[in-house]
Image (tube, rainbow, N blue to C red; front, side, top):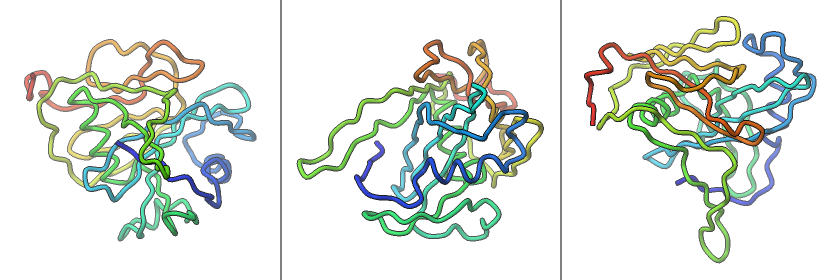
Length: 216
């Protein structure tokens, strides 16, 4: 599960996205002068160290952008190029915010979710009365039925148009501008969110020989 700690954060997530996203090469012709949050989905870090959240943003002209972020309590060594900003969190202290596509913890969680048929992490709020489940408006699900996830290599990221491709022993194709496409066949992460009630593809994974690998 993912845990939400009530706190004051500076900058807020939307503020940092509004400052960073318009300068990225993958926004295409989207009007990023105004960005509003449609929803987000999280994955769990098995080690409990890295927060992972993918934001779905509406642009001023009605397009949908997909922006994975990771939140870390200490800087990731050698990852200065993918550092977006730092954030002050009144409960967790200083946080280092990264482009999730470059973060091996995020890539591993994403691929694992897709190939094993996983879902988004349940989000709980930490309160004085204990953990309280927060209602989710964004839901994702992997299409695979593997019993284990493949071992990955260090992610190498490239952008072509509005698509980010991550090579990590498998190829992960993540459209930054989301175009509603039905899941169909193959290893995909599909999702729904407010305003998009029919599942559509958010991420694809290409694995050589995937049809015979770890089918369950």
